[in-house]
Length: 201
Image 1 (tube, rainbow, N blue to C red):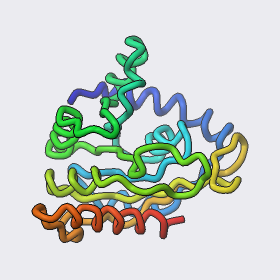
Image 2: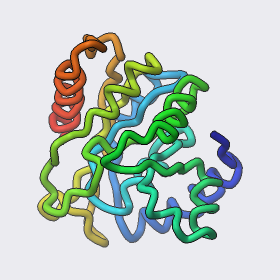
Image 3: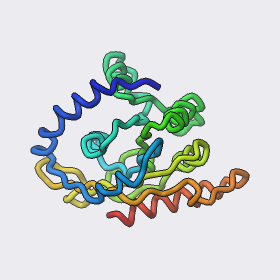
Image 4: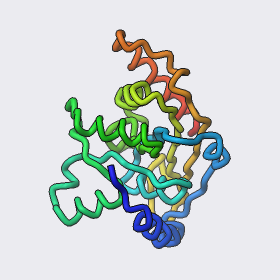
């Protein structure tokens, strides 16, 4: 999976001041970014279309994001996303191609961005998490860095209102205690990760 790192960094540098003005944000727990190295999963809740931008401008390394396949239907926009390291995933399906790309990113020491709920929360409340994050962490044997995005208006992201991005302590894949022969183990570990994100709020 390729990413135009120079283009990514230039775009982040250009966007950051505008976001700071329109959607003032505060970063908490940035010291946790130095506690993790190599490939890992950046795992966040999902409140708005701006979430990926919030993560990109507050995270120290370029991120490869999973995105719904519908975003790639417009070829020009899809090409732009691909340059930024965004790749498509078929939601609700066993997308082996997408999962393989994600695992290869992790094994190549890249940072994989995942929204654990799989879709945006329209109410600001946390949704039921998807088990893909646990499957990928176990398969690539890579850790997870939990992060929680919180809006100021009933946990919704609003223009000119403060948003908080809180980074938590890394979670080692071995801490998940996954038994690959037991599917319930993946659900249990996913709930564990989700609770770490919830506690950050």
